[in-house]
Image (cartoon, rainbow, N blue to C red):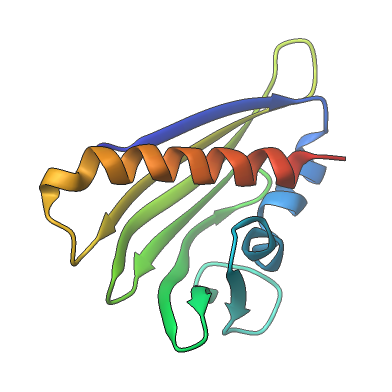
Length: 140
């Protein structure tokens, strides 16, 4: 699957952006029919595990993730370790020219039951979903 790449600038300082983008429960609130389940004790660090569960009633799928790189307030990398959703995600923060923060969100997303033929469709849908979530997470 091609890597999904999203870049956004915000006037917010890196520490505030970091806090917003690593609040895993808030991520779940930005995706329709999804909630985040944190499986490890705070604070977040390498080894933290959580699941984004999406669905209605008994029809759900899980995106199980583990933090494998934790370098606040610059870089977090997640490995997707679910049965259905695999791949990885990275959120990198850089100083923005003129102040604020530039967010680089990269994601490799694979849905196991789908054939590779559908990768471009999954990438477009993923880009839309993640860009929308990012805008909402950065909103004042």
